[in-house]
Image (tube, rainbow, N blue to C red; front, side, top):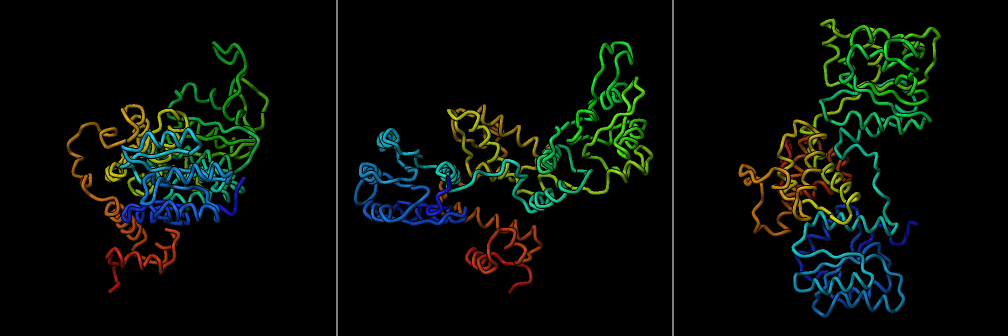
Length: 447
């Protein structure tokens, strides 16, 4: 149950100025309100009068032990939020004791700041202060957010949809979202037109009656029949033979079909989603795709850009796939090194989201430890070392560099338009301008 009084409020107990300021800034960028304490006494005071969704605390503090604050409040019967302790090598045993006493978790220094923020959000979700992320999300880039905003309206009104884009960009995932949002009682039936031999295409799509051909020992329901009251997804529609295109067009016109070897017309009320990586208009001009079918399925088109054109989604999907792995294998949690994210952002991903997902899965499986570094993804290749920041770089400097890179990318994506960039980032124009001035980022046309 959500606790409104603790909603998105974090108590950060850290006396180190650089570390504390960096973590506070990062948590605020993630939408948390942060109360910063530098001593055990200050932490005890604010925890007695204020409610939080998570407490992030160092163990060693100038005036004592951060763990003692937790133990004292727990002994006093206080209703405590999850405690996440930050510990150095010398206090790991103490952190383990606190976990046994009821603390939520601990992280060892030096830690991945992004992983810590993800853990804070996870604990906040468990506490009920933050809603779990939408598993139907399509990505964080502006292009994918526009698609996500459009899909509910299409799901309410559209009976057919064409999804275009390179192989692996996530066309089937968007089709699944279209089906889910439609809320129909039928199934989502996916058909890869390129994987069905031409001789079997009619039987697979329309079904067949017993004895329709040698080996047809019993009647079979085709994909169109299975999709009744649901969604039929025809992937790689450009690979469908011309003869089958004509039969599909007839079915689309009145939602009727005849099984192979049958005589009685049957009805199937389904929504049709087609997908292709090919240029169907060029195929129409070349005579390899029917013009009438093209205009029938091309009423509404959603184009999904390749991953290299929406780098924001690379980071989003990497974290999403790592979280999926951790959900299935909680005893072997993995986290991404932020330096590795910069290497992944520099890679072109010709296989798009599909290639990225396989790379994350492989890295999670093969990595000898919890931290996924560049070698986990690319092996011991020497040509990526230049993309990694220097190990001596401070956390504060690294976070500032990441923020600067992200803002520059966002501005470029929106043509340097301040208002559109601010809206896409979810901040005010004034806040964006202040960040640009602080980071010495120049905007075209601005003095």
